Amino acid sequence: MELRLAEAKAMKALNPKMKVIAILCDPIKRAFSLMSMNVRNYKTSLQDEIDILNDVVEHHQNEARTFGEFVDIIQPFQKILGKENVLILDGEIDEKKGFPCLFKPAKR
View (tube, rainbow, N blue to C red):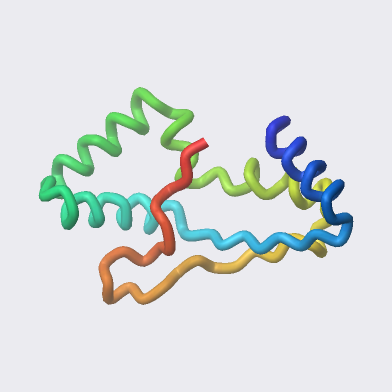
């Protein structure tokens, strides 16, 4: 959280009128999107992907939380820049493609 506060302060120092657009995706859909992409691109099985996700949730909880901890990411920017300067949008795109989120999960 301290790093994000420092980032927000640096952004505001560069441009006091800074505006931020955050594009978010449902964490469950994000996880499914990542698993689907891995099955398609790396020829793994869906069961292997589910097993990996279960292992991450059980043993690497900090990494697993990146799927849904949007508050920790956005709150520092809202605090420093003001809530009126942080626009939050739904990151859903065409679900016919099988991977509804715009990007794979971000890593911290």
